[in-house]
Length: 327
Image 1 (cartoon, rainbow, N blue to C red):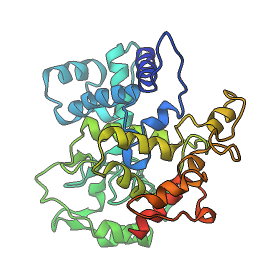
Image 2: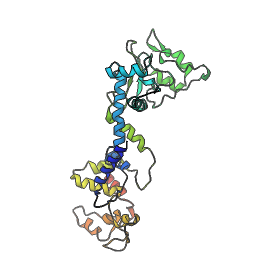
Image 3: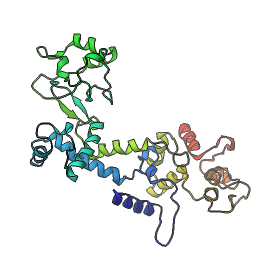
Image 4: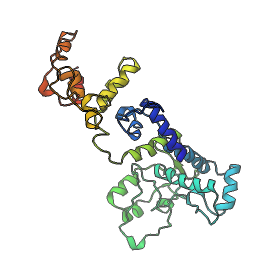
């Protein structure tokens, strides 16, 4: 993964204009640049996460095509009497097999079982309940639970319907209601693993990457590197008819990525934070574009005849949201 980090570093340097001859400020982290555009990032892919998503595709193929030649070779060596989803690492596992087991965890995190006949799905440890990201089934009779039981044990094999008596006496009322509403197969088809993060039910590198990357972005970040903004604002920025260069400029304004005197001063890269035009207030983004006494006549003298209410402006993002609501 060292190569992925190195390439990410090169891409970040290129984005901020850094070269061997000059250093540039990285105003926000590469992690936040990798956020989707509708959440304030630029949508750049994290190569480490993308590589993991690519490898997970091989694990998905192992599940979906167990009779492929390469899958049969691995099965004969590592799990001759079992299946890939429950196979162990083994004493002398190869690098390829160890990698597949790591990516199997990615698959099992996002996938769930579609119950058709109930013969393959573990009642307690597999994810198969509709609308639940975790299996988290709780029995009202803990001492009687068979941890190896399959879902087929609560299906009436004659009518191909859920066994209401067994379900009602085993699970909570909420779980019972969810299970009874789930459709079953006709008994001829085997249970199958599906990927609910994609409409087709099959794993894709794109959906896998989004899951992996967003899980990493759930880690709390500092207020200086991330702002919680309405998606409507980013839609305004990226959905406008402006040329890409201007859209990029507006993105930098909202994210606070412009080298104003105040921003440079806060990073100990300048000696004076004051506006070079009025000389009265710190040159923040808000002051530069809205609050400076030399800027306000420009707004009023333009086609919009816009009068700026100084008291209502606390940040560029909030001002843009106000404009969006007015329009």
